[in-house]
Length: 303
Image (cartoon, rainbow, N blue to C red; front, side, top):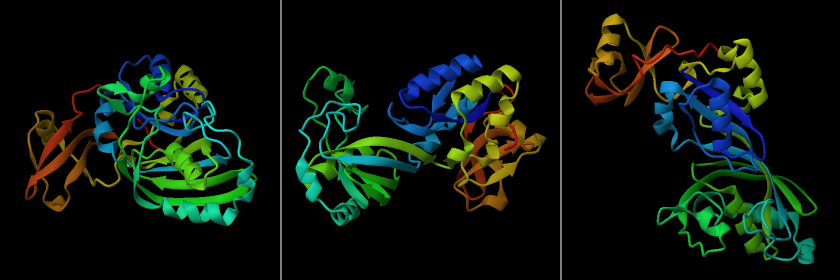
């Protein structure tokens, strides 16, 4: 089976847990995800199945949109609600105004240096930081450059502030919450987080694991799959004739004069079968970067 499926990840599961469940449901070993979600987080988790796992390289820098709640008053070791408190509840938060929170949020917009949480998948000498943190070992992570394109405080009620953020890949909203608490002097952590968009995939595209399981049992998996022409919308599409498809299958270059300005293109055979991603190498000449032809027929369907 070749498909792209968008799962509405439930809280309490890691992204890898979801991948394993989908492998069992589909009875398909080749399943991967396009961007990790923390166990406590919910929402859009795109999965690639079969030969379409090769598309993951094109989603490394995908933007994400999140909605969530920051709770002020104390920090935690994981920077979210699942961790242990690392500061006592501060009554001084009562003296911090909504205006102050909104003003502080503005400082996090744009390109910033951000230190990932100690409980994260970032590696230290090849070891994931969270493994060291669980053993109470020192975790020293270096700041990295991220971009927060939008960060809006939607509402402040008591010690909680709801927000919406649009960020580049690699941004940790847990770190944003923690850093805001540090700067306000009262501590803070991320209480909840829901991803509403990842790349071109939205919540409207998503389905629960239960829905996927039901569709698998009733033979309706096509109804849940994303049409491949919706993938990578930044790449124009070209439909190959039999001669072009044969060249692609052999890894040969194509001449595409009508797409001379495109750096990369999606090559289809028919309306639904994505057979390659081709890269322009000179003038109007395109060479297949990845070849999907020759794999089992895709089962993705119209959407």
